[in-house]
Length: 371
Ligand SMILES: Cc1cc2nc3c(=O)[nH]c(=O)nc-3n(C[C@H](O)[C@H](O)[C@H](O)COP(=O)(O)OP(=O)(O)OC[C@H]3O[C@@H](n4cnc5c(N)ncnc54)[C@H](O)[C@@H]3O)c2cc1C
Image (cartoon, rainbow, N blue to C red; front, side, top):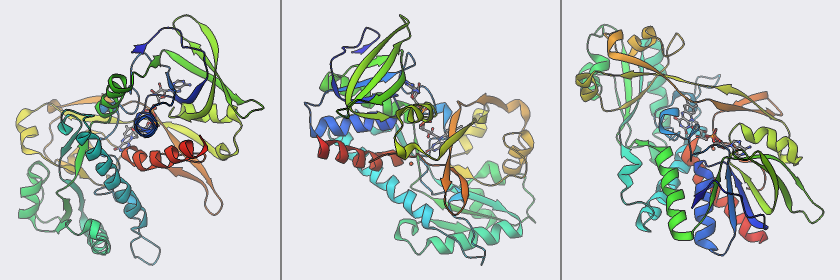
């Protein structure tokens, strides 16, 4: 049961902090491989996966690197570096395979409850943008993972892929897109809740909601002594665990500091939120079936920025929605100084969203090897 009652204070093998997808996936793998493991999960909120993981709080792309332009930077010599995009798409494909296994194993009644197909596209305009996208497409053709990606500068083709983006657009303006038919839209919140619900049924796990982890330190036997605060009763208790996994988003930084483990050195973070302009006009929604990535001159999501994509966007057809905050990790790099990281960082022996699945396998290996 998901419980608000007092946690059993007996030792546990693995203690997970935070109900994000990575905690759920790690627990699935551990329980599948070693069902007798005793795993406790503590979540400071009164519900599961409600922060950045909730559907409205992220773009649901899982950073698959099919459309995001910032994953293929241009080098000083003008060539395109595709190494980051390759690493990301490889992890994403492994995640999809793990997802297929979980569907076959009965974790989900239907995969469509959390993953659906939608083309991912990059859209650029102007000579510079078009030259960049063309080069980027050519560079990515060297990998079989991108070979089915299509590229076009033809107005007619673009209008068939993204009608609202091309309607009322100046035909003399150069524009280009890449089009990847096998893009996906993932509801990470539902995915995570499904995993926890299934764990509850299959392994009778307990998730302690409304419990905030306040501190952790290692005792002489190298076990973690974790202090948790029961928010409902204002009571603080200790739990002893052999392994601790922090899937606590920005909250992990403070806990890492307290844990004193050296892998946590050199990290900091700053809060980043997001705003969406959500379309209310059914006729317009029905015309659009793609995730379109691009670069805007002004900071999104003002109507001006939107009109760079949808030239005749009318303010009355859209409403502003605020996304949850995430903590953008800043990492020390010996050559580049402080670097912003966009993926999920995994500290210790064991990347944004489903890239956490392959990372989980590594975390899982280290727990089972030491156990
Ligand atoms: C606007 C926006 C757009 C994004 N778009 C994308 C995208 O397109 N693709 C992508 O891959 N990623 C995207 N992300 C990022 C992605 O959503 C997050 O990387 C992912 O959800 C992981 O979240 P997190 O690590 O920040 O953890 P969070 O979602 O913040 O979850 C941490 C959990 O730990 C709990 N917690 C924290 N501290 C404690 C504590 N001390 N004790 C107990 N529990 C605790 C919290 O209550 C929470 O449930 C986006 C994020 C935002 C905000």
